Image 1 (cartoon, rainbow, N blue to C red):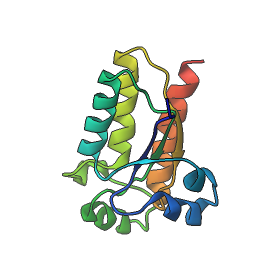
Image 2: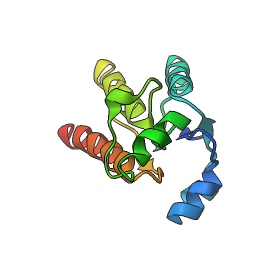
Image 3: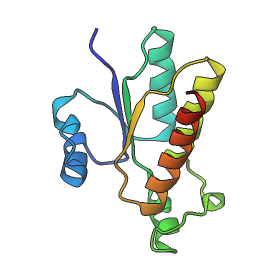
Image 4: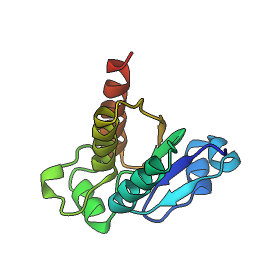
Length: 135
């Protein structure tokens, strides 16, 4: 079976992440692209129900125009999640952690390709914290 790689981003493609990070995985691997938190949840749960689990998930943070507006207020140094009406990639990271806890699963390897400084930091922090707690 091919390894499953999930790429969460509202409009970019994996080759765009290569241009940002210079990580060749974005060119070499076959990615399932999902465009929103809801699609992320649906994709993961559907694959899980088929006995499949991602090897890697790559996260973007800003998944809607409102996220850019919120981030711009602080120059993307901080992000006020209480202002969101649409889930961000951070919410997707929180969801996958809870899904792993509920189903006694290890967190897939992860990458964060977001250009939002605060978003990248926040997603990385919670995923690393959970990952380290499982060791």
